Image 1 (cartoon, rainbow, N blue to C red):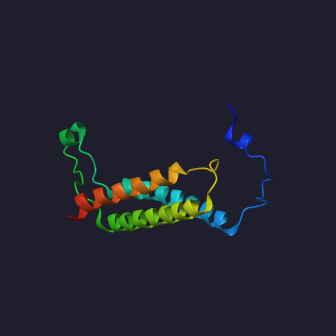
Image 2: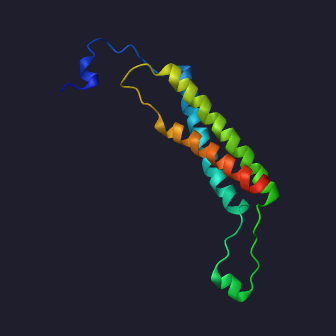
Image 3: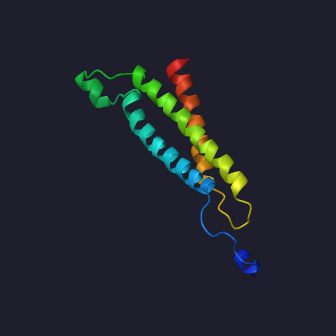
Length: 126
């Protein structure tokens, strides 16, 4: 069976990356970087877990979301979701060939960010 690249007999007219591909790559990189920062912020903003040893020694555990950090996390996740959505829209209009990448990682990033926003809104704000 022939590969999809082998079926194409014409010349490849892509000489270099256009501005939209560069914008897409930057949005993707910024989105994943912000998601990594959100993971770190969530570590400090989320309630602490209470283990048996902490109960035994009477160590107080924070059982609420840290307010200023939760607000930063919530905003950071929304911005990350918007960056990934913008990158998905650009890639949808710029990738027309069957051999082009489908960018499932950005779809996953968008879905995870929205799910996390809903989780935080439900547990920290409502």
